Image (cartoon, rainbow, N blue to C red; front, side, top):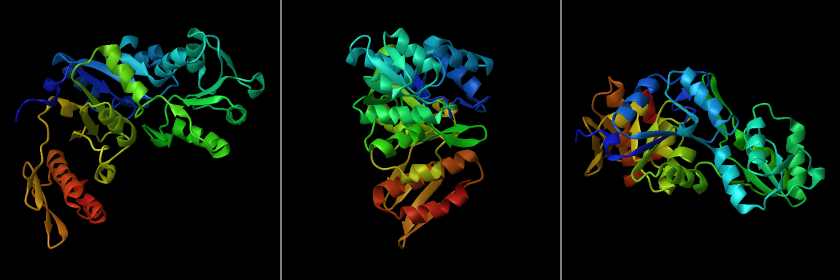
Length: 330
């Protein structure tokens, strides 16, 4: 099959952190890759769980990195959270917001009042990622929830990739409050339904695909929304995470980076106790896993990984042993 993956889709949704950029730098090949996806006729839409910055600010950052992007090309979890809350809560409701100025301004523009203290008896607490969070705000959120305020989070990513490595995400901040109030927030971002429901509605997508670097948000979210997913290895999750993915969390496709959209799908076929992908084979021999085939190129290693993943997922092969083989696939 020589048809590129993107030829089957009218809209490509892309996560940002770890797929498009790593903090202040673009992922290698991403700028040209996005341009080529657009040239194929598909619409590009950036979908991010990060609620810290406004869509305008993120679009400016993308432009500085060489991407063609405006605020209409972006959907943030902050936008989704505020729009959904505007439908669910009475106009003028008081929100205790622990996010950045962006989240506060979005809430106010939707007709909400905001506060930073539980003593104002807020109707709800809305947490969004804030890299400069003051501990007192986590205290206030905890107190407000204990007093009966409904608790919301824009997303629940435990960490986020940067050019220096992984750093704590909003999920870590939510966990601080959760450890105190002993309940969990209502969450809007991936993998939860509101985010991608909003994205599909916003774009009118008929045949969308989601491209992400995280199994627990991007891939799971796309799968739950009924759209194909592409896992790329430029951000948070890697080969080990792929092998450990459970039913419902597994991607439709894998690729080194987002440019895999412009290539034919990597296909694996079962042959007895073996799985084959291109020239690579992962097989059970006398109860042990054996990988055959060339491993001298990145593409060949990904072929072997896809064969290995399908073997583990479908035959009950020992995932622990398979993880030991990953050193061959670096």
